[in-house]
Figure (tube, rainbow, N blue to C red):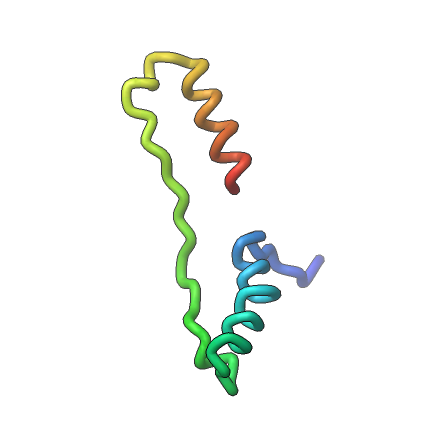
Length: 67
């Protein structure tokens, strides 16, 4: 049984790159001073495209590229 846990890429990027950059930019002395990310939400309105399968497929491709 593996003890590794899944960490979403945006959260890993935040921990590895953004937190150190914020600490340097704002002269934080402690990592606990850096603002925390609680939740990352990506949404997209497709409106009238629900009747057109090609539009839905395109919307799925766009969301996959973003996330």
